[in-house]
Image (tube, rainbow over all chains, first blue to last red; front, side):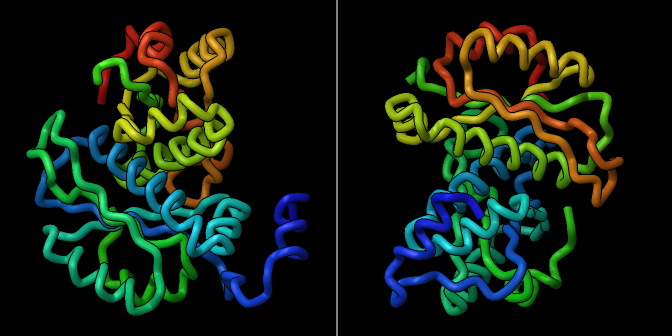
Amino acid sequence: MGLRSWLHRITAPSGGVDRVRGPVKLVCVVNQSLKMGKGKMAAQVGHASVGAFLGAGPTHAGHVEAWLATGQKKICVKVPDEAAFDRLMTEAKALNVPFHLVRDAGHTQIPAGSKTVLALGPFESETLDRLTGELKLL
Amino acid sequence: MDDAPSMALIVRRDVVMSAGKMAVQCAHAAVTCTRRARQHGRLYDRWLESGARKVCLAAEDEAHLNELLALAEAHQVVHALITDAGRTELPPGTVTVLGLGPAPRRALDAITGSLASW
């Protein structure tokens, strides 16, 4: 544990602590219907991961810290189209899983506003597996 | 905003990875560079506000990535060299991606101008 996280641990108010109950990871769900090239997809997954990590900071500080400290584990899975994103986001909300949806600016390859990648986490792998365990690896 | 700061994710062309594996390695570089850039207040803020731009480029091999890394150091551009843990697809310790930036467009172009995009 680093000095900062140790200081945080001994000074943080006990009521607001974001408890982590097991190994954490980030799952990036890619919309296959857009037929993105390999590089385009990599950049979009990059957006999703950075967005998820920054966005989860205020609400899931413990999870973000644990994720960074354990090598920021990530996996990529695929869904056939963006309809699956709505279901995943509804379920994520219900389970208190942070998420970040990437909409493309449309500079290259695909129409502006396309939903490209949904990042779920960082959160307990066990919970994420319940949400995305059925999805195929990319 | 064409002079908006950008980030480059440079992938080795000689390492064969699935699309998912390559995306994860790039994301690793993007997150690590983002963390390292947080102390560069204004540039970092401008990058985020202008859409946190990222491009994916190709390098020939590990030696090529190291040359680019040396240039990044000379230009004082934030960078992160990613080494795979080797749990899937690749032998442990394989260098996969070099992340550069967020950096001003000119600084980034000076380093990556000759690279092909993916």
